[in-house]
Image: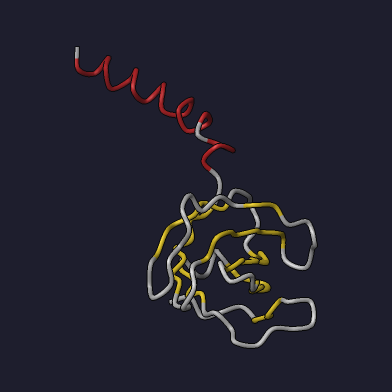
Length: 126
């Protein structure tokens, strides 16, 4: 009777893998807030686009090293991430490679551009 169970399991496995398709795609990114102020929101867009969408954080991410992990749905690797801090400042990380890096250290920049956004390049995530 054991060979029949093995055959049945082998037959069902491809169906289970196919079912886990698009819903399981995406990457996980650990965010570590090394700034002094809390991050209250996160928006994400494909690198170079202005089509930002909110990525829920749950609760504000306190400064001083608090961390959380977010799921980034999609097949792409490079994204622009825009963070908003409790004090009203915003920080934009451009061209973050979530396939290469699995964590991002958020550093609150003391300087902001005229539109209120500090801009940083792709950070070293490890």
